[in-house]
Length: 498
Image (tube, rainbow, N blue to C red; front, top):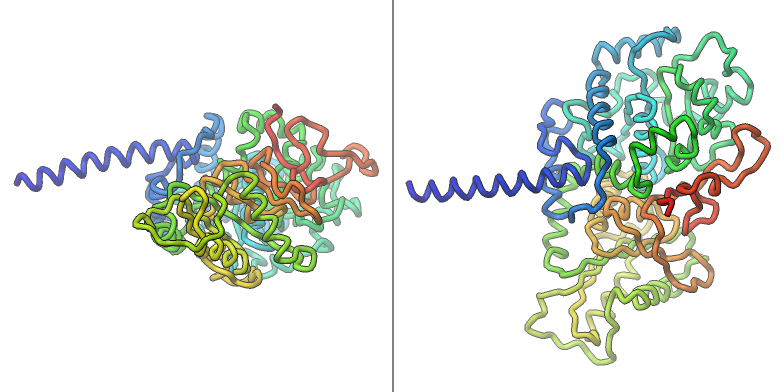
């Protein structure tokens, strides 16, 4: 009986500790429902990462605004009311099929996300689409094809954000192009969708990808948002983090300021809210972490993305990486002698996690620290989870591995990322730190620099004045908190005004 009493007491203490952790985590990641059962979603009965992430991820110093927490709670209720196969959803589907809508209807409105490109691009564009849904009271549904299946837990309690298989023309979503008849850009260009339009379409296709046209980008003009607000279904194809351009729109300005008084934490909060690894991915993450990273006193993530091998030869990039870590004193220098194993060999003080499509960078670092002693006497271990050789966007197994490695990078104490890389953007945002950026220059001097903001970069923003479409403007100089990116001179990202 005494044994059972002791066990019971231990369980009570453990439960109290977990509750304390979960409360802190729920605030950090804006996951109000951190311990909510998701058994009614029908697709993801469990989500271990939602509760267990606190055991691996450091507490975030970036606290969400109370207004953001309240807004997300309201959105969850909206999503639950309008989720697939509810009466509200069925009425909206009926309007979509018939093409006849009631402009005074209070029925649900939707934004359907259709993805392109690699996983980093997809996660950034989903976040952008979600914020747009928050601002316009639209429910976000994601078109998850095979390559995206089983990557994430359902983000909203007791419902699903996945577009149902019986959605009209679901099998055609990926084939939509800019010249499609119901493309917003095409209709605006031909002047068939304007304030004098009597018959509002039941849906419109938004092309917000890296190669969208100026007419497609009229989406970011306040006057066109007024028109779009009347359309029940917006089908959005995107592969970019277009979110910064929403902060240039006067119609959203007041709401965004209340949601995000700290402009540098938009993706940090929304990304942690939306993206929880599925149990399948979580198993990969936790096993690799325990096997290789858990014992380290300090974890350093180095993310290497080579866009053009001819302009980024291996030796040049390797020299740049070494110059960066030495300049920033991330790792100790090595001596010229041979490494001699010591009794404290297993007490690794620093661990380097390398993520790259290629193995050469890991091999060079591993050989350097494996064969030579450090001048400080510190032990340094180097690991690389995988090396695919090339990006395989349409392979589910490739995206599973990519998501696991993004998450592992986000558990680092220090991050070194490649310029322009959305993979690195997601990792730094989830972690909540400003990375050291490896500049993509012919002669990188300095080899890297500390980011001024941890927000991702919008690579292809609009450069025109909404009031005078033929006038080119510097959209990075319109408001203090939207400026050009450190790693891409024409890109846009969010900064704190100070």
